[in-house]
Each structure stands twice: as structure tokens, then as C-alpha cells.
Image (cartoon, rainbow, N blue to C red; front, side, top):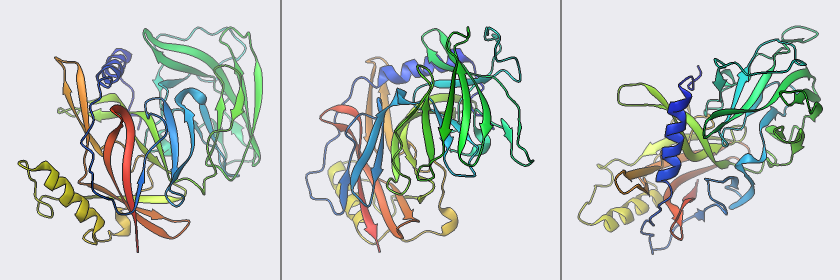
Length: 360
């Protein structure tokens, strides 16, 4: 289930390589012809910020620094799940039902986990902390360590224990590993959100980050996931892409084949224009409901390709304009088609540019 039980040294190497090769942007050629529909982008780089975008409002409705929160608490009255911020290299180690008050030295064999990018609740780093199938609820009172990947491995930051769940709130106890800063935080549920975001690495507090769940559709974010190599071995990578609001939209993927729009290596501008015209036409037909997904990473990162020159220590990104995303807005009853056409703004990498058109 977990895709991240790999050597920390491999993770650090891949993170370092990913960050290093992303420092030498080169602009894609931008189309000069008019676009149909709406053109969108983000105010801030996906390398440093999480950004929320609304299709119906044609605007970015909120953004925050990657390090602005640590844990997210499911906000519904029936919610019980706790997520980890997957954009800031955070990890959680479950030390079991030990004495919370003891001075903690994190064992060398601690298993550091992060959440799967799909958002599936059976693949979280914090699981089964409460049994809601019995009354009253039963708690494991496990002690968790929050850590962050650094230059020399994973640095333990805080210990915490989840101690209470009701239809109205959660209760979490937080402390330094040496018991020098005990804090008890009550996290009140807010049903207009998907998750209530909480910071614990400095002061334990609720932070106002996530917009109402009826006003945003996609979140641009940095995240980690494990990707198989040519031999099928999973390795963790730092990715940048789009998560969806799974309470509001569903997404199906469509790929424009070379039978539909021929490749044209001798005239890439003509191929680009042909793909644009094909996207804007009615040629892309509706897809079966079974092909739509509500996974958080249903859009993900694959809308761009990268060419790495290891000798020159450069990476050049190019949007894959053959990748189309069909979107159902379940709340407003609207349908859209979406494509990405650039990953640069004024020569700086990390700014997704996209075009979307409402489909009748």
C-alpha cells in the first residue's frame, strides 16, 4: 500500500537531483495566435507555493507557502482521517502505544512514511488511530513523530498523539521530543472545507489555508510519489503537478493520437497550431463515466516532459499538448476540457499555463 518504504539516502539523492536540475529554465515558444476559452496560470511558483484555482471563476482563489501547514484533519462531521503535508518533504513515524511523557530518542529503524498522492484513505501515513465502529470510540494512543527530510537524513521535529474524535472536533497533544513544550490543540470541524490545516512544528495552531470546498477545482502543488524505473523498482521522486478537489470534480484523460493530429517534426509550429485547433474543436468526444477518476492526482504531473542534460546540469520542460483532461464539475453541472501549454513565466520554471473550454 505504501509506496515510500525505501532507503532515505536514495530519497535524498533524488530530491537533490530534482531540485538541482530545475534551476536552469528555458522558455518554451509561446503561441501568438488567440486562444478559445480561458487561459489560466498561478501567481507563485509551484516549487514554493500551493495554489488553488477555480474554473467557474477563472481565477486563483487562494495560495500558501509549502511549509505553512503540517497536518490536515478531515472536516466532515463523520470525518476521522488525518493527512500529512506532502509538499514540504514531511514524514511521520509511528512509535506505537508508548508513554507520551517519556524523553524520546527516535530509533534508527523508525519507518518514516508519507501519504500516497492518490489521496486514498487506505494509503495514509497516519492510520487506524481510532476505531469508530464501536461505541464509545477506542483509541490506540499511538505516539507519532513528525520529521522532515534534510541534508543529513530525516530530522525529527515534534511528537504528537491523537486523543479525541467527535462529530465536532479532534484533540491532539503536541510536544518537543524532550517534553519542553506541551500543547493541547482542539481542532474544530468545518464542513465547508475538505480538511482543516494545522501547523505543529513551531506552535500548535489551526492555520487558515484551504478555501471553501465549493469554490476551488484544482490545486497546483509540489508533492512526492514513487515511480517505477525500467526494472519496475519503485523510487521516490519530487513531482510538481495538479491535485483535484475530489468533493467537486472528476477527471478523465484523453490523448490526441498522431492519427488524429499527425506529428510534424519539420514544422513544430504547424503541429502545435493543429493540436490547438483540434482541442478547441468538437473532435474530442465524451468519455464513459467509468473512465473518470476522483483520485487527487487524476491530473498529476504527466502534462509536461523534461529533457535533462546531466553534463550541462540543465533541465528543459515542455508541455505535452496532446494530453487532454475532461472534467466534470459535479456541483455546478458543468463540463470542461483542459490542456497545458507551458511551464514557464518570463523564463522562470514552475508556472503552469493552461487553457480550458466549457463543453456543452
